[in-house]
Image 1 (cartoon, rainbow, N blue to C red):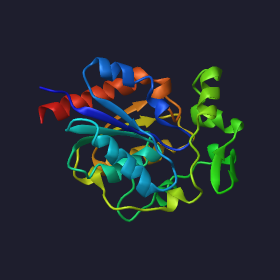
Image 2: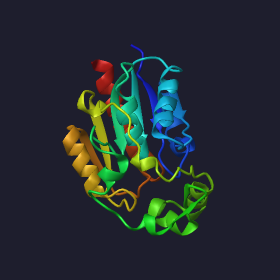
Image 3: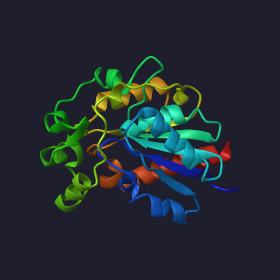
Length: 228
């Protein structure tokens, strides 16, 4: 039986390369893999980018979303080609919520004290990288800064339809040392969606700092979907 495909969705201050420690292993294990690249210009276009990737891989597919990528897969996951959702330290708004209103329930100040809004875009300053990815070696932290995807300032206030975690099986990775999205928000949305939940001592970027752990969770999701 063919293994499910994997489509990744990155968040703010990132691009598809943030999954580079996961993709080669999953490919070697027989999965078709795509990492969606988001312009971070609008939620609707980012959701459309994930759906376009679904057209480039075989069904069924698992969507894996990190941070704001969790909002994206929450909406894109309503697509019938999607069999399951994996959230990594991610947002997962309900139909009456935005990314911003959800995050406001469990505010963090660490990383947001190190941003700069210029020309309508929200930039992460170098001083904010330790709050975002502080458990990475310094060389990797510099790479995170250099490859950051920069969102429009109102991105977190935008809404589109679809709440896939209400109808699709979900897995959630709680990063217990996250200073970008509060770990209590992780736990809240994981419980609300009835996700199979795993906790790891990581910054906001466990796919970079704890890739083996994240791979094991994706494998569990893929195994479950493959049997369904």
